[in-house]
View 1 (tube, helix red, strand yellow):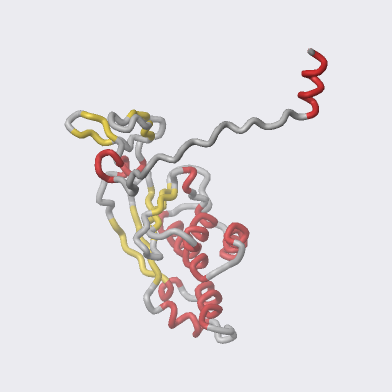
View 2: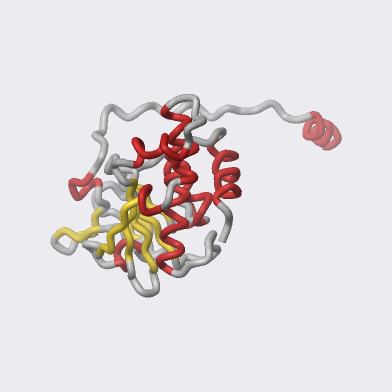
Length: 216
């Protein structure tokens, strides 16, 4: 298991600095790894993280767990909460972890040398006992884990817009295959279609000009 110091150094490299929420993300992950019996970071897909906000917390989670959006082992559900659910995809055991509401106040007790409240959280969150910093709940997902993970490699074509749908995210409406946008779950509305720019013809390189001259 990586040390908190190493995790925060890795997170800071991506985030450009260290902040209190990165510490929370890292310590949430370390607690989840301990409870689930996982070595972290992971190079496989056994751990799935459902984060309830984007931003700083996720950078801490990524650095600690190795889970990331591109690997489909980290999902962002933007509920505006600094919380995450850690799921063992083999056993389907799921643990939701969030900060203790009193942690902000308690942080200064562990960092009396802090310059201000922000600095107290940054330092205090690293030193506080996990029982004072975090709360955890064993949970069960409302939809089957297989549906959350979906089916990589599966493809379908929407009957309305004609766009390709991957990973089993299509829906069926009266036996007609639709993407979720055309099925009424779109996050956007169509406006006037922009005109595609004309193809830009780049000037030939000197090497290409020499070849063209040689053949002329």
